[in-house]
Image (cartoon, rainbow, N blue to C red):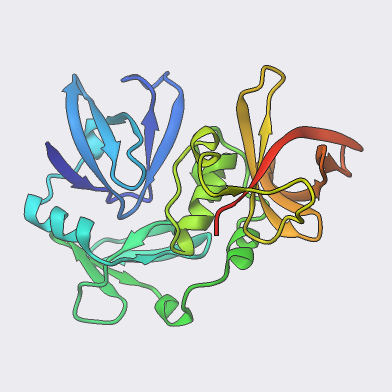
Length: 257
């Protein structure tokens, strides 16, 4: 099974081998994936980070050396902690914007340089010197990001993509979808107060888990719905001052950290 590294800021992953098919997730720069099969110009892939499967355009797949890919996949990497970071590939006239959650293995000769295959990249400033931010600052840095079904980047993000990326940056790996994330952690008792880092889950009228948000404490929740923003959370659900109504009905709150 072929192993590859994402060389682009984002690779769109679709549910079926077609441009018209629904976006189900995104692969970020530096994340690795396995090619399961090929159908015409489409590759069926599995993302290593969360075992999510889907289809990508074959022209976005680079022919990296398999040994180099394996080294990259197993290396301890720096996870981009801010909404966007700029890198420049030596010899290229333009830079690439990397979204929060992208992965970099600093394997070059300088503090802020790294290579993937024949490409030598350089961070355009001393990003690495700032360390890893806390979960609240990571979540707030994505404030205002527009909602995009299947999105995992600052260009557009969905509710579970938002929580997954926030946790990834602080070093905690969680699954891709809200229906999977709800299986993690400990359920809070009715009299327990939600704290920073807890995940709140919400159901549709038919009972399916369709939404997740990150508790900030003090009855606040940050979540991706329309865009990434903060609302109020109580035992009934999410209350929006903007809509002057409840927008999501609470199912449970889980303590992940």
